[in-house]
Length: 412
Image (cartoon, rainbow, N blue to C red; front, side, top):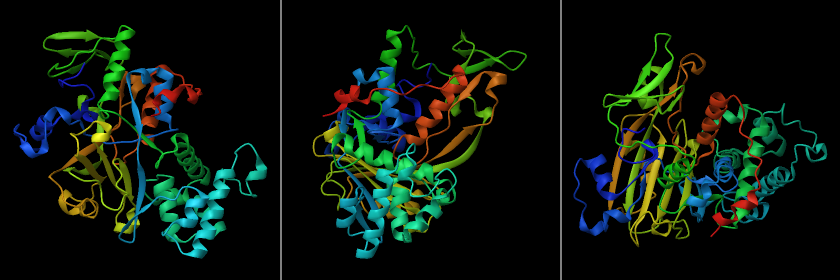
């Protein structure tokens, strides 16, 4: 049941008329932007790691038969005022302008260590127990300078801030391995894939799959209210005087505001452009990570771009997003380091949205509430939240040991 007249709630994709209504309050798109129906603008733009957990979930559920994916062209990192390709292999490290000659050698040794690391083979551990050693201690062993640590931690391991340095090193090494495996999977310029026609296809694909198994979707149901009995347990959801009865409710934070708390806010800019992002090798789809240290911030900034090649805009048009965990109430000023990288824009929209997390006890009220989307432009943190909810709802962990070769249909 959904109060909106479209699938996907917060993570939907809007056409141009819907986008203008949301951000400007009017419907009339300027002619130079092209047909409204050719736009599928994600409200929560995220790429998927080609070898990541979400892809495993999509294969496991067989929802991939309703979706088509295309590899993302580029993965870049912002360093000292410039945009650089993320060097992910030992050979790329040697060629990268991100480092001097001595740093390259040290970084290459570290990357090779990560590539060769096998949890079950102590001979690959070089005497380090990564379940006891912090990332900071592992990095110190290789003598990596702050500059290298910045791109390894934020652009390869995809950490959102620097807390990981004092956490166990195994997590960072696993994240780096996931990046390398995802990059190798489609032999593209990045480890990411993205669905044709935008992320709004994901909830629609699940709706189709749900219908096959007898599920019912109700869109455009105003004022959905969750109904509780005297013990405070959920017994249904009411809309327009009718109640759909149930034993458990799964919802986003907006449906149960009294059972969530605000945990932050995200500043975002959405730009429509007629060119790719400068200095990204003319990539038609790309992620640029701006690590917090480079900007003097508390958290990273993310730049996400896709275009008509993923069927999300008319021919010749590009859609770019700049996102970060907001530290002020002025998105135009706060997002400037990211928007400055875009070059000329045809149109740009700014806003801030609040993030919420549940504070209820699901075993008492049978309400399972998701956490709001963060500012990252990849799905790894979101999908862990979903899997955690699955375990709470069903009482068992989802077995994702699937044959990834089954996803060959997802390749171009």
